[in-house]
Image 1 (cartoon, helix red, strand yellow):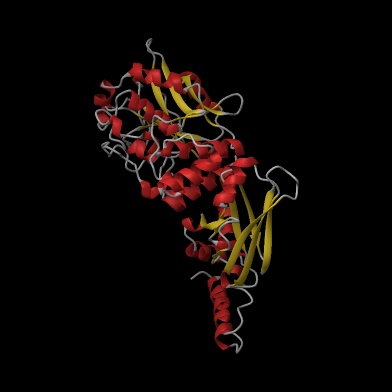
Image 2 (cartoon, rainbow, N blue to C red):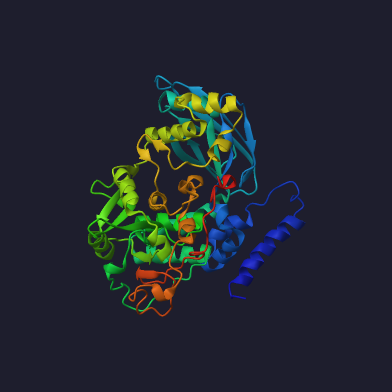
Length: 484
C-alpha cells in the first residue's frame, strides 16, 4: 500500500462515520461527497481512485430527452442533482421573424453541496452547453432561431438535452485527458500515446533507427493500401479519439495508383489544400512522400499494406482512375456551419425516405406518416450511390474502398456491399492483402526487430493492426443498425 493511501482511506472512513453516527444524518446529506473532494487531494492519491471509478464510456454525454413547447415538462435524474425538470418557451425578444426561446431547467436534490451537472444542448443547427451548481430554476437563452428551419424543427422536435454523465469530477478528468491530445508538442505526443495505451492497450514499442524505410517504388502497385496513424497536433488528437471510439489502430488511409505510363500516385480523401479545406486529391508519390517525411507536424506513422497477388490480378486500374477523377473535384469536409449541418441532416433523412421534403417538415410529416422514429431512420445503412448537394459522402477509408469496389475487389457480391458503412478497422481486416511474408518487398521492415505482416515505412513506434487481413467480405458486411 502506498504511503498516501492510508490518509485517503481514513478520510473516506470519517465520511462514513459521519453518516452512521450523526443523529441528523438520515434527514440531511453530507456536506460533500467523497468523489467531489478527490480533485482537492494530491494527484498521486486522487487519480488512481478516479481511474477505478470511471470507465471511458462514462465520459460521453447521455441523452436525457428533448424539451419543446408541445411536449410539456421533461424529467430525469442527473449525476449531481437527482431531481430535474425542463421545459421550453418561445419568445420574440429581438423582434426577429421567427424569434427565439428560453429553456428552463429546475434542479434539486443534489447528492452533495459542491457537485454540479454539466449539460449539452443541441439542435441540427447548433450545439452549446451550460453547467448548474446551485439548487434553483435556471434558464438558458436562445436569442434567435437560425431561420424558419430551426424554428419549425424545435417547435415539433424540441431542443435535445445531453447530460455529461460522469459529473463534475469525470468531466474534469475528461478535459485533463483530452486537452493535451491536440497539442503540437512532445507533451501532446506522449498524451496521445498514453491515452491509446490506457484505453486500447496499444503498446507503442520503439523501433530501431532509422525510422524511415528506403523504399523502392517499383515494388508498389495499384491498390496497395496506406494505413496512417498520427500521434500529435490537431489531427493526432482527433485520430486518437476516433481510434478509441471505432477500435481502429490507424486513423487515416490512402491508396496507391499507377497511371497508364506507370507513374505512381497516391489517392487521399482528407488532404489539406492551400485554402485549408479537406478535399479528395490524387498526388504524385514523390510529392506526397516528401510532405509526410518533412512537413507533416502530426508525426505520422505509415504502413504500406501490399495487395495479395490474386487481388492485384483482378484490380481494374481503368475503373479505379475513372472513379477518382469524379471524386477528386469534391470537397468532402467543409467547416461545420449551421446551414451546412442542417442541409446534411435534411438530405440524410430524404435519402432514407426516398423523398425531397423541405427540412422543416421532413422529421415531422414524413417520419410520422411512415411510422418511423428519427433514430430508426438513421439505422438505415448509407448507400454508396447516394449523392449529396456537395457530392458523395467519402471519408478517407470510404474513398479507398469505393475505389476498390469500382476496381472489382468486392465482385461478385459488390452490389450487396455498402462501403460507407466500413471503418478503418473494417478495411484493414479485409482478407485482401499479402499473406506470404516471403513475397513482401526486400526493403519491407528492413532493420526492424520484429517481422510484421505488412511494411511499416515510417514511424518511431511499431504499428499494430489487430485483426489484419483476416475477414472475407460477405453480403451486407458491416451493416449494423444496432451500432447507430
